[in-house]
Image (cartoon, rainbow, N blue to C red; front, top):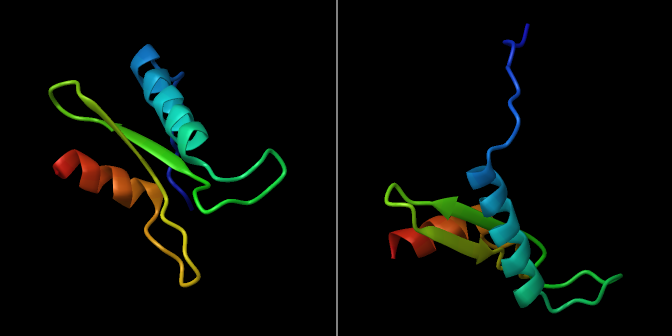
Length: 77
């Protein structure tokens, strides 16, 4: 049996990260509205000091790093 998970309403800070992820994918996609592009997912994280970082996936024919891995690398760098 799966454990119960309590869902909460996203905070303003959570929504700020969602918006940053949307902005980065919109700014970096190479596809039109009805097309699949090389960059199809955005991700954002917040550092302990409040700085925000964003990244996009790096698609290629063998797969490629997910946006989450890219943004963690960007934050670390």
